Image (cartoon, rainbow over all chains, first blue to last red; front, top):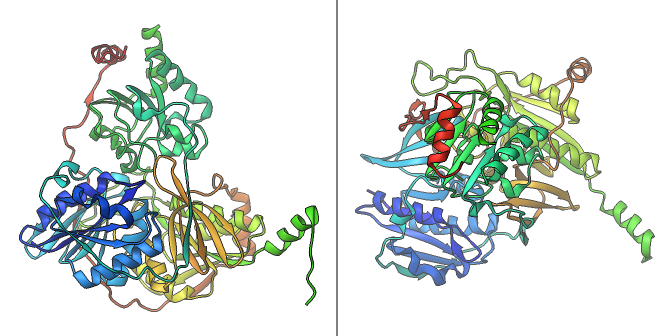
Amino acid sequence: MGNVLVITEHMKGEFQDISFEMLGQARKLSAGGSCCALVYGSMKDRSSELGAADRVLCVGGSDDFNPETYASAALQIIQSESPDLVLVGSTSMGIDLAPVLGVSLDLPVISYCSCIETSGDNFEFTSQLYSGKMDVKSTAPKAVAMVLAGSFSAEDGKSGGSASVENVTADFGAGRVQFKELIEPEAAEVDITQSDILVAVGRGIGGKDDIEVAQELAKNLNADLACSRPVVDAGWLPKSCQVGKSGLKVNPKVYIALGISGAPEHLEGMKDVSTIIAINTDKNAPIFDVAHYGMTEDLFDICEELEDSLS
Amino acid sequence: MLQIVFEGEEKHFYANKLDKVHMKVAVLLKQVPDLAEELEVDESGKALDTEYIKFRLNEYDEHALEEAVCLKESGQAAEIVAFALDGEEVDKALFSAMAKGADKAVKLTGTEVEGSRQAAALFAETLGMDYDLIMTGVQSVDDRDGMMGPMLSSMLKVPCVSVVTRVEGKGSSVTVHKEYFGGLMAAFDVQLPAVLGIQAARQTPRYAPVSKVRQVQQSAVIEEKSASGVSGSATSKVTTMAPPTKTGGAKILGSVDELMELLKEKGVA
């Protein structure tokens, strides 16, 4: 029981799901106390969507995210509201805010939070470390927690109720960071967020030439090709194929993961898919925790055998 | 006052010369447990058992170093100094950094540091305002108590942009690209001095051949700086560390035939 403040995140005029996920959990954690949502720019016009909060605090400022101005405004609001817990997304924007706020407010920062509960006077946090290989639990009476997308239910945060909407003035800082422009991704050949079946490759595919094997399989299954971040970083497939935190969130009927270990950043993009089949020679790979079916044989052997069966 | 006006190609040539920037860049490196290893919890039940595991350079720090060296190679940075806190296999990482293009390497010794916040405080104390640009990886696999770069920037009271994929020197500022999701990015102009949390360098981090690293080990010296203790700051208390509880787990298929059956059942094959 305590006061919780959620820093909402938006893009192109829409609240991101993470905002609702955090709000839903904030509502539960603040039982007895109050739950506020901090809103930037013209998103104040969408405050009615944040009914799960008791109060919506609108600081104004630009619609375009700015690490300096957004942190500066949040700092002031938090200093005056003094919540026990501040929730920030474990996202690109969140990384610019949470650690900075933690230092400025002298509050502990909790990274990669997948679970938050109350335990007496403390909050108890679960952080995913070592690429999902370890869960670390920690406690603190007050903190800034960075919440992993998909940890809580967005539906809970969209629940009815009406929040009081307040305009608050804030100082946006020294103006040392200037937003210039948004850069849209290159038009994709295939929009994998609309695909019914995806064959996704990870580092385990080995190299650019080996992707052919997965491409063949995809063709035979009438599926689209997707991948994890390392494959894009290595230049083997375009960014538009990337599934995950800094890539795309996909929702096919079937997701076949070849040589993907299942780092949390990748899982963020596909863990809710209804049928996940994982092929990875590492039986301890985290992908097997979210996959419904799996095989630990070499993916090239499996693909070769599948080819024969399918043709 | 004599005003020189250049036209056409001449203008382009001299403009480039005038734009030549001389940023002094610090790159902050950290060794992290190699995730290819099997990880186990130690006796305390609260930390990794590090006795038998291998360490490697944080992959995002590799990118930070690569982007810094690219800045130097394109004439936008005058000097790159690699920093690391003393620890497991750190000397190797620093010599390797010099083999890849860092001009100097500094190891901070004398204090046991726990977590990224204390590391940030140590770097803040040591680096002060000596550098135009401080680059480090956007995050690491073990930064449970916050990302080091932004915390450092807050302590130094300088701006920070994280998840950066491109840096361009512009004299007293840098233009950076920050990555959001799905390929969406934003460009920002950042006044120096500043801290950048690097997500990806403009090219794949280069490899330093063992022979080159050996050469550097013979010819170069890692400077050592001792940093005094860090004063207490807000911390959370770790209660347990354990592998995540498996929630059901995948049904392991015994053969490709079984896989085919499944695919047919799902209407895929």
